[in-house]
Length: 474
Image (cartoon, rainbow, N blue to C red):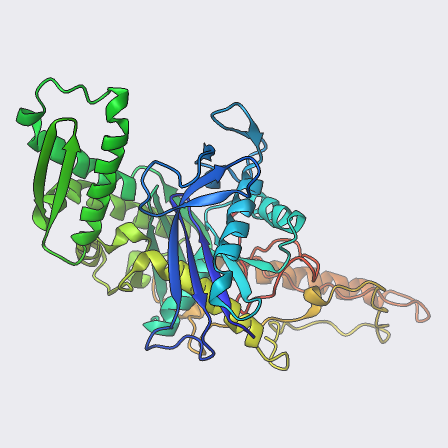
C-alpha cells in the first residue's frame, strides 16, 4: 500500500492530507503533507480544470473561466451558470476539483494511494448520490465518499480521544458558514444544523471594515468602488484574513494597506478582533442549542464540544463555548485540517482492515417458523460490497444510547422503532404457523436500524468500504 489521501470538499476551500508513511496515525500525530486550495475552479480551453492555491488572491494562475459557489449547489437540479453564460452541473465541477487534487497530490506517493473525500454533513442524500455518479463517470470509482463529521470525529478520537459517555457536539466554523452536529462516540446522530450567517468570511469582512475606518482620514476622496481598486481591495481582504489567522496564536498582527496613493500599516491586536466578532460568536451558541433540540438532546447530556474549520481557531470561540456549556472544548492546533486528516485516516484504515474482523449486526429475537426456512440461492451477480461488513473504527467505549443520563434519551427514537419491529415480527410469526407443511416459508425480514440512514449500496466498482457507518442528513 502506497499510503492514503484525504480530501476535504469545502464551500470556501479544498484541503488534501497525503499520508505516505507506513505507520499510519497515532496520538503523537501523523506524518502528512497538507495543501489548501480555494474553492475556485479555473476552466481554461485545452487544459484540465484547476483549483486556485490558497492565498493566490483573486487572480487565477492561468487565464480562463473562473467558477465559484459550486459546492453548495450539488444536488440542485438547476445548472450553475458561469460568467460567460455557459451552464455546468455542480457535481461535475466538484468531481473535476477532486480529480485535479488527486493528480496534484500524486507526487507524494510511490504508487496509487487509497483515497477518501469528505462531503459536507448538511448535504441531502441526493447531493451525495449525484457526486458519486459524477465521480464514477470520470473514472474515479476508487474515491470513497465519507461524511465530514465522521472524519472529524475519527481524527480527534485517534489524536485527542473522545468522552467515554454522553453526547459530543461538533462545531464546524468554516469559511462560508457554521455547521453544528451531534454525535455519540464517532457516529453522528440526527441531522446537522447549518447557518450561513456566521463564518470565516464574516470575520474577514469585519476586519476589512475596521481597517478602512481607521484610514478614513487618509483615504480622502478615494473612490473604493472604482474598477482600478478592485484588485487592491481583494489583496487587502486577503491580508486581513492572514491577520485573523495570525491572531489565533499571537496577540497582535500588522495589516499592510496599499490602495491607490495610500500606503499604510495598520496594527490590529487580538482584543480589537474579539470586540468586532464577540456578538456573532455568542449568538452562534444558539445554533448549538438548536442542534441539541432538533436531535432531542438535553444540554446537560453534552460531554464535550469538538471544533473544526479554520475559523474556529479564533481563541474567542473556545472561550465562549466553554463558558456557555461548561464542558471541555477539544480542538487540534489547525482545526481547518482536521476533516482532511480524518479522511486520510479512514482511507488508510479501510485499506489495512482485516477482512476477518467484521462488525456483527445487532441481534434481535426472531420467531421460529413452522418448517425449516430454505436459504435462498444468492443472485448470480451478487455485489460483494453489499455483503462485506466494514471494520468499525469506533473505540470499544463508544457511547451507547442508554448511557445518557436524564432528560430525553438519545436512543428514544431507536427504541420506538424496535417496538414496531417486534410487533411486526409477532404478526409475521402468526402468519407463518398457518402455512401448510409442504409450503416453503418466506425469508424472514431483517430488522431495520432507522437511526442510521445510508445511500443505496453502490456496486463494488464505485466505492471503497470504510471502517465506520456512513450517515446522511435527512
